[in-house]
Length: 303
Length: 114
Image (tube, rainbow over all chains, first blue to last red; front, side, top):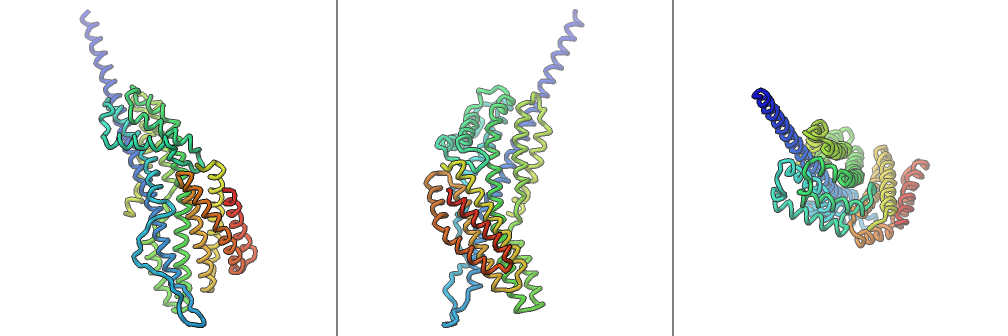
């Protein structure tokens, strides 16, 4: 009889230990998912800022090119008045600050969701999310309810806003879910919708970035053609200087495919969490963390 | 909010402008005459400015700003047509000039549908 009791106690202890290990592993996995989501968010924000900076750079050099290539009036022998502001202020018009703010909120929707399921994994309630986070989630939800997010092409606007409302509802009240996998499963379609939108925007922005890089590079090429006419072989030195200057003012176009692959990895990691019981999503979450860390590097380096 | 068709047409116009820009860049890199290179670069910059406006329209989050953006784009159609005429006179290779102009014409057609 005592032997049976002993076996029962040992069995229970092993079971509890396994549960505890499973819980810890899930907490660890979700913590990494949260880190991956935040790194992906940082990479996105770096990309948005690069889009704005590229427009400002383009604006300055376009003005400088117009100034430098102005032609004298053949009759008066005077140059036309071409403005040149060497220290211009810049207010981006292609991706305005207001538009960037909306983009940021879309990305914040994902990072706040990651924070929320981490709180769920830790067994804490909604109050563990800071008041700032809750206020931000409420703000984002309000914007979505007013159809404040506009789809590009990958998904339609109504579905996008509905997706944001669903995700922010979970952020603001995750207590209706008892387990991470239930919450992850509940938002998987909406997360996919939001990510599709971000990816489509990234592709459009990449076109704008490439166009601006082309603009500035063409101006340098044309100017060097003129220098060669006037300086001959000595233009080599100007070419070398132009090469260095271009590298410093035109950020290399970011690898948008890498950025979008990171967003896909985020969706895949969430899908794995939706099906995981005790941390079984480790490969997918590790892939997310790895991709997100790589994606954010170029933007950290360009600061 | 912009309809799916409007968004699609905006995206198509962006692609057409980029295609024209890429061909212009090839012409600029191959140019040996400074004046010709300057003119081609100016044409490229005109297209780049137009592209910025298209991207702004695509990013517009409300009906009013989208309507304003598309109205501004349409009002500049004559400017793009002037660019087409200028490109024909600058680009020596008739076939390449025609291809660049065809991309701009496509962009104009998509913009007209906005």
